[in-house]
Image 1: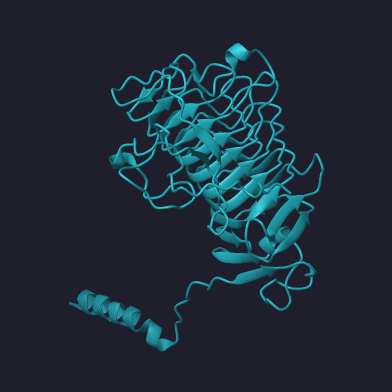
Image 2: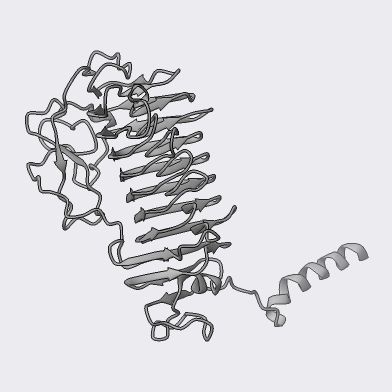
Length: 393
């Protein structure tokens, strides 16, 4: 009896502890940090918008888990890699307005380094001039409305090197170089790319994956690859156990300017699988469109400018000219992402399968317009004006 009474007394005392002055600690509230041209580092914690810091790298060092760093319009030349060790959001004023660059220095490998077990989001800015990668991701990273430009990729993946979980949307990967594989993106993790433009990226001499190389799991939706260069897989290469799923992708006008024309395929597949639907692969030079030990798997409704991509469904179109035109107009749209258009009599018009068709095209224009979904990253809307500029400061 005594033991039961004692146990009851202990329970009552524990229940009453909060009322005896014991405080329950609340989780710390997230703080917004500010960076602006003319701001000063080293004298504050960047939490006052009227007294901002001057560099992104310093502001990030002041953050706690869950904080946001707002980077005002301007050009920032960082003196070190911006390392993300804790969950954080980095937001600029626009990819054409906030330019985050690093000094030209072989010891500054990256603009951003995202470490493992970190969840981060970076948006509305341009990242440029890193010796190895614009971004190296080991964590869980979302990139949106970014331009990753003119990074050099000394060990592959000039634009992005991904070993974690990556989502990219409404973004441009432009003019990145690699002395090895993968000018634009090197993926060993899990990556999803939606509404994006890979343009002018270049793999190393006698190497592959001008636009990207994949050895992980990769999803491409409403993506355009053009003017990328490599010795094979001028746009896309896939190796190891890599798998790629392509939906409404346009791969055109990628070239081999480095080696044998015989290896100048736009897609090179030595990996596990590449599945393709509603996709254009054409006008890549000088002859092959696809190559490799593993044929592509067609899910139908694709266009091949030749017949090397093994599109074998009844609704595929081989030896077919998609009648591509110029870049689509993007002025006034929220994402700056262009896509190669086509003429109104193109066989891509209304020829895609609606069940696989995304809700918008690469620019965010609603699909379908007309009788059905168009093949490729562009939905024809009779509005064709030259792209003002690819932003690559």
